[in-house]
Length: 139
Image (cartoon, rainbow, N blue to C red):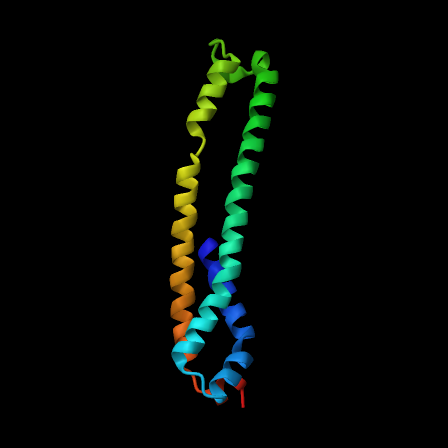
């Protein structure tokens, strides 16, 4: 799903830039200049989105896990899945802390996604930059 959203973003963003690219090419911009412009202008929103998404997802995950612990602790005496084994808050907190994704791993995932997004943007920008100005302008 993430990759499809990335492709949709790339195609829509760069298709909205076609007119600008056609004008740039018409006045003498080289394909490399067009490619750099398209890549840089497309990458900035992606970087901001990844930063906001990574920070938000970490915070939301902690809130959700806290709520799960709170509700589970409230329901421990009524839990039919405990098999008679007493659960306490320390054990539950320990189990949840082991399942939390460390910040370093979250950042590595975000960097990997950003790298994939950058490659996709660069490849598509290179393909679009090769087109003739008339074709970009739709004339």
